[in-house]
Length: 206
Image (tube, rainbow, N blue to C red; front, side, top):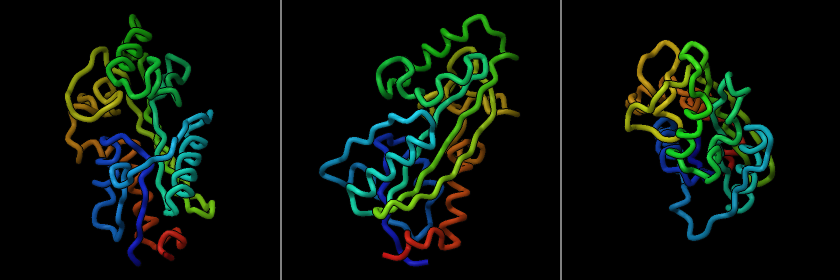
């Protein structure tokens, strides 16, 4: 497999760290927002995780002239009809305000017993080329929403999400433990397997 450069379509350092951890050791130069003097406006206006991930990956790839990897992910809570879903990052009104998003989620679930707080994390990864080629990977992590935040690791809804079969929240897990069970970790391992097999060919043709 030849060496390749890959632009990462996220300004979230937590996501960037998780992605770099799982893809470590591959013949990849991963470039983040910090490696560019300017940065395009990567909007999330789609109605699905797939639409958002593809749009961001294509926009960054065309802008940078490099293959780009985008992630769109969020939390779907059964008792809330799948909310916050694609609006996970702006659930409380301000993009990326994790504490406010978690606070609103817990208010919405107030009075709902633990057995009815089933939820899943969803992650869609989109790999795109400047020519418009795309590869999609989707994975989920089943679990439940806790009644109060616990833990100081991770980001987003990690302090209130308990993966199925566990008693700790995502925010109480080490990065290695989290990547072993998380939606993003699963998706990245599938992507890594493709890359190790030399796919997609256009990524390694530069």
